[in-house]
Length: 151
Image 1 (cartoon, helix red, strand yellow):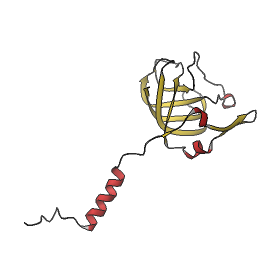
Image 2 (tube, helix red, strand yellow):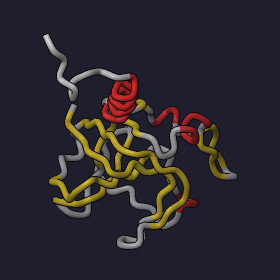
Image 3 (cartoon, helix red, strand yellow):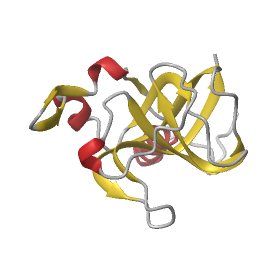
């Protein structure tokens, strides 16, 4: 039996294959966060993000909550709340930022669900004051490039 020269396994080919396998392996699972773990403290002087939330900045996270009543039936963003709300919790400034909401920016315009439906959102965590250039909406914590599903 003769070996085919292109099929022989050399150290070099093995090393290249192993390196490619590392890059091709599935992405790390999203870290679960909850509304209770977003902040270290908050009060009259403002709030401070929890150390874990700061450490997860830029990483994939998942969070369970309720979609607040949206501005439109289809949108690229919405507000996720701890409890179902009857009114939209949009804020005038980050000084008024409620600690039990997170802004969600979807990967694409998506039909939104009713405010009473519980959902799981997954995407990249963003932390810190930011003003959306299109809506003027000010947020402190966001999940970007997100997708969601009903629970």
